[in-house]
Amino acid sequence: MKVGFLQTFPAFGKKTENVDQAISTISRLNADLVVLPELFNTGYQFTSREETVALAEKVPDGQTTQALINLAKKKHLYLVAGLAERENDCCYNSAVLVGPDGFIACYRKLHLFYHEKRWFEPGNAELGVYDIGHARIGMMICFDWFFPEVARYLALKGADIICHPSNLVLPYCPNAIITRCIENRVFAVTANRIGVERRSEESLTFIGTSQVLGTQGEILYRASSDREESIVVEIDPCDARNK
Image (cartoon, rainbow, N blue to C red; front, side):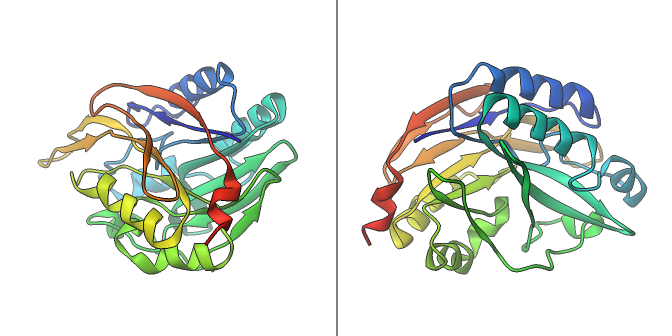
């Protein structure tokens, strides 16, 4: 199975530009599964509730999810991508899973980090595991990694691969995910972003180092800290079933 990620540098608020660039890159890849970063289409540093509502989209009917569905059908692959979801008066930091047959699932981030609590509601649904034919996958978003129960729960439900859209800023995060793979004998694909956002008095520097990890914590590929990258790695999901 060929799995990969995009490591991007989104321009805040420029959804069409960010989505078009991601689609262009993925179109050149030969992959079965590609993971995109957290909030890949909007950027991360919201400054007001009104801004969050304006940039968030309905799932699966919003423009970003529909664009990903069209790409998945065209390329016959599966995509996991982080975005801001709007449902009625609530916004969620979410990840969608789409494939050749369309929309599959949406996961809402359970553990909100820092100022995210100002703009988003915590997830309100059970963690799911989804059979995509090649493998069974689960989703967690960025700071969810900090809580070992998340990866453990997904593994106990049968996940072979944990897809991990992220906007990581803490330098020890990539190595911590190695531990999650060893603990649960699962693969992990972390898709992070790069660059600096300063939309308030505080600036955030994102650490890149997106990675694909094996079931024994081996680094199958780790990206740079400061360049946009896309990579595809071949894995055998059966390795995750040999507990």
